[in-house]
Image (cartoon, rainbow, N blue to C red; front, side):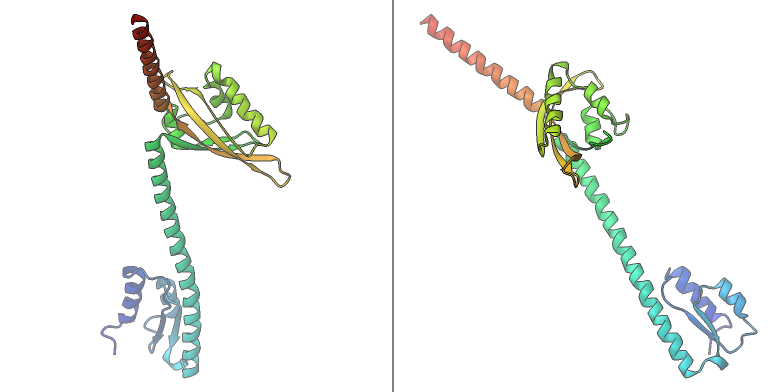
Length: 238
């Protein structure tokens, strides 16, 4: 005995709307179809079947339950796959955020260069190394080459020549002009990917801002020279 005439329909709304369960199979059985017409119920309520008691034999009930369970199993599998994909996407977002933070701390960015179209993409940290906000300017090979110190263009040309020669891994160092008109020393390393015909297809690599290291090396070299000079001067004095 139902508490109210709409207790069954209220349960449907509770399952679908309050519990937010869209995959469980709901089958309604009524002894008074005139009170709740089938067309109205099917349109207004998210149910999977609406059956009259007089038409519901044991065999039919068995068939309805088995088919409902099969459909539920399929929907549950789809729901599980969706949940796994969402988790994978969340994990990828977290990993990407951690990678971006690590690159920011290390002053190291990554890039991809399509050797057939010359299209190039930069990570956020490469923009920062160049003095720009991420995506403030459009990444391009021409822009990159225009930033290279005139005295260091030969290193960039050697880099390109090694690609044409078929070298798999290439590295070099040169200076780049930042947005604020200051030069930064960078170490660039790339790995070439080849197509089925063993032609260079794409290159992926990293850019590391090594300006602080270069400054330290210059300071150490200067200190060493001063020490040598002092030693020589002391020898002459004696």
